[in-house]
Length: 453
Ligand code: GLY
Ligand code: MN
Figure (cartoon, rainbow, N blue to C red):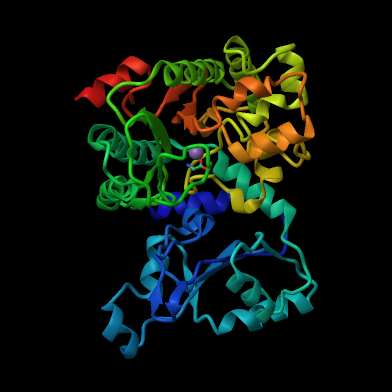
């Protein structure tokens, strides 16, 4: 493994010329007092270049002499009483192929010398308060994150190696087990929490959760993290859940199924529109095509289906161009996936997702996290959904927004429909794409078959 990390660091160095690069590892994060912490999650870029999964570290590269140093403190006797023995900093460095180590206290002085010599200290955008504080304490205040570093890191991380694809596929297989289990077990009278607990158990046995589970009868709330409802006959249930491996590569799947064993006709109609959009998008995946174009094709397919049902009207091309479909599909079609479930989102979507170009500001399209031409090795999700949000419907209706494209009277009958989403994960190949993991029930028939058990 140390060879893989050494090669990754070497490739980064080749893309940058001078100065220093500082990667801060993550810290433990207190929940309600210092020693009672949230689950520790290492920073994904730190993992990418070192694989070291331990809090309280920093990695510094001198781009002029190619020297990398791991900064960290070995455990004291007091620490060991609580944590047990862990590898030393030197041992961690060896595992990552890093030759030099130093105590954390040395970092500030080294950075001060470099800064006095007028050398640039490159760092990534901090997304935790403690990192902002650390940068200030290290004397790197007042300087923004380095765009050349963001670009170099994201271009390295964006195309996955065969090792990474295999890790992601493992995560997807565990995620699939979570979904198959939920689809088999859900019954009227159960709570959302019972299903959340069961799928979490499966993820924890495999490595961990890639993100907080969405297990809900209110699928129209996109990131719904409440689990207090009781499942009732006639409702739809939406599960959006994924595992990560012990190396922290993610999987991310979504399924929607009836709380009963079969869909109602109305649920089937909307499900089939969503599935049509999903299949069209999956078919379009290949190198060279811009993901924005696939998103728009998927949106048109949804708008066509909703027009056939009488919920939308007018010219579908115009409706989508103006963003009218976003009443029902207010988010993006998918996102990159890797060491983060939304891969590299902390680096800034505009850089890794749009190659520095500005994103659309249109409601709906502005939430698309990927807007560039696909390349072999990209791993991404395809996750169209159709959502009926009573609050949004009321707001738009009151404003008369897109009234030439939306039949608000017909939509009224769906205000309590909730929402549905389907999601699978794909790798872009030389000629198209490949679904990661074993097949997941997709069609109404396949979903019904597992529900009937
Ligand atoms: N699975 C959560 C998301 O994609 O936002
Ligand atoms: Mn997703």
